[in-house]
Length: 328
Image (cartoon, rainbow, N blue to C red; front, side):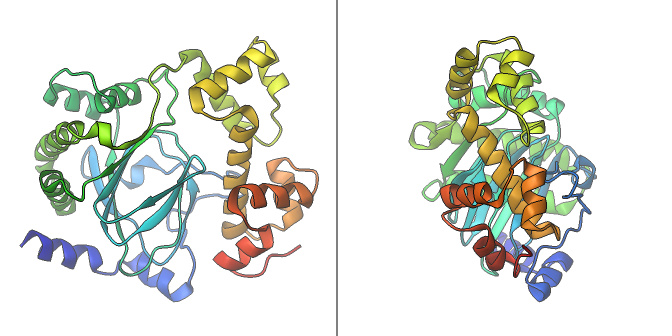
C-alpha cells in the first residue's frame, strides 16, 4: 500500500516538470539572480511553510544549477539514479542511496529522467537539531558528531555522509514513512516526523562504519570566517591576501586549509569558480568573456583549462550539452 501511494504521488508530474520536459531546460521558478550571485543560496521561505522538517521532490527533466543552502539536507534516491557534485566532488546516487549534507555546501545535480525520483528532506534550523538530540541517546559516532557540528554556528560546514540502504529494510521503511508524512502538509505531522527522523538516524548509526564519509570533526573554528571570505571573494582572492587579512603565515594557512577541507587553496577557489561558471553558462546570456570577467579570469584560455581539468570537457562543449551554442 505504501509503495502504491508513493509511486502515485512521486511519479506524478509537477507543473515545473511539465515545463522542463517541454523546454528541455531548467525553470528558474524561485526567480534566483544568477548574474549578481552566480552560486545563489536557496531561500528558506520557499520550503518551511508547513513545519520545521520539509519534504520535497527534485523536479525531473533538467539539471539543478550549483547552489548552497543554510539548512541541513538529506537526499534519498527513491527510484532510478542521479549524479551530483558536492563541493565539486562527483557523487552518484542509486536507488535506496541516501546522502546527509551539512549547511553551506555547494550542490549541483545533473539532469534526471522520468524514472529518476530524488527526494529532499530538509531541516529548518538549529532548534530542529536540538529536538533531534532530545530524542537521540547520547553516543559518540560519526552521525551524532556530524549533527553536533551542523548545529553550531562557528564551525566549518562542508561535510556529507553517503549511505547505501539497499539491504536495510528498516531504514528504507523509516525514510519512506517520513516522506509520506511530509507529503501530507499537515501541521500535526511535525512531532511524528521528528520521531521518525531521530529513529532513522539511530538506525543509520548501526551501519556507519560501512558508509562513505566526507567529514572531519576537528576543524579549527577560526577557519570559518576565512572559508566564508574565500567563497565570497573567489573571483579575486589570493592566499597571500587572505593570510595578510587574517594575520596568518601563508604556508601555515595553506596547510590548515588543506587539513580542514582536504583541498588546497587553489582547489577551493577553482571549484567555486567552475560552479559559478556553469551557472552563468546555463542560466544567463553571458558570453565567455563576460564569464571570465565575473569569475576572475583574464582570458578564456584559463576557463578552458579549468573545464578540462574538472569536467573533462570544454566550456563550449559543456554549454552545447546543457542548452545550446555559446556566444563567444
